[in-house]
Length: 136
Length: 392
Image (cartoon, rainbow over all chains, first blue to last red):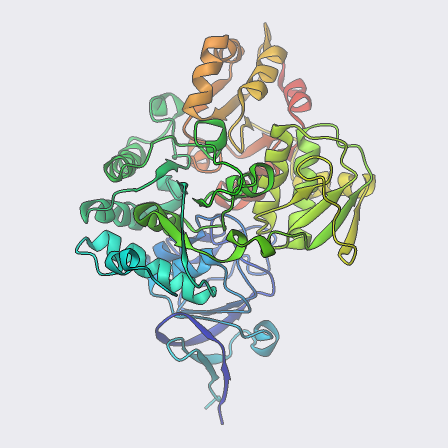
């Protein structure tokens, strides 16, 4: 059984991976070590987690406009998220995802409750869909 | 989006930098429901420090310049990772300096004014009211929308550069009058006594309203520097691109149906607690966002004939620093053991590699970014209190 929800295409592409949820907004700038993908912002829900290869689910972006370059840099270094799912993607995350070719979908309003850490999902950002993959 | 003949030509340009810029802007316009482009008067490029963008960023900018990217409107640059002239004195690693200079070269090749400041409005790039601009420095976006009355969205670094190269930006969000209205009302019933109090208010408000547009009621008056600190804090702890200060930036009353929050002495005190993780510091930094000549003058007045027991950086644009030099402020501050730096700041310079572990600041924006990005413990207070603690 698999369950698919529809959102809106922000940056095209298809990726599969394990979900990492942040119920809080994310500022990529100052928050993620681009060499490792480790989340370094203090006192954040994701502090100490690694976002590399994960399908990162968070409500929206916050903070510095340099976030776009950080997302691009993570993608170039191979330490970035496999895909991004947002409630609402603002310009800074959208620009980073488009340039870094990170599949990104928004408009999934209950995403941070719908998905849990460790869920396996397939993000078809070109179609704007997210499918929860069943456990074997 | 509806494109004019000229815009269609940009999208099909032989110049790859122009074509890619236009593609990015059309994508963003489609995502955010823009029906057309609007021509811009100026741009502000962010992501200028080597520390912020790293090798992928250097290669991106050099590649863009090599493809023929050239800005079509006045475009200023955000702070760099070092004082372009005094980096050795600052203790910046030569390898870092080399990579930073590659960024400077690429920007100059594209025609970007190498202003290296987060306060373009204090350094020679001041838009007019209602002018459409594409700025990507979160604190300057807030200042331009809220204090000046110009119109810009919170651009990402590359989207602002794309707007500069094409001379236009998609017309959505804060370019439209109907979106430039308050979303929250904040009743301030405590007297804000200095710039740090305004920063603390902003830090608190940004966390709560996130990407909203707060209306502050009950603020008696505010200087340009206080408004700068308020907006910068909200753009760091939240994503606030525009705010209103009743009786200061607007004479209009807020709508009556807004969610209302109270900010009193208890909230102010709690916010100072939130922003402080140490009292023991080895560096004091002022000028986040970059200091005005008036702020530098205040620091110089207090330090005249004194000596500091720890390092002090006062960060400003080159334009403002040259005025401070002529006023003798720089000499007074440096005689006391501090430095007045241009082009850079404590957030974008590699301070964690210079042996500093804890920083004192009157900036809530710096206090928000320093723990993660600069690996610093933070002591937050107003300028005069911080200087008092450090004078021998």
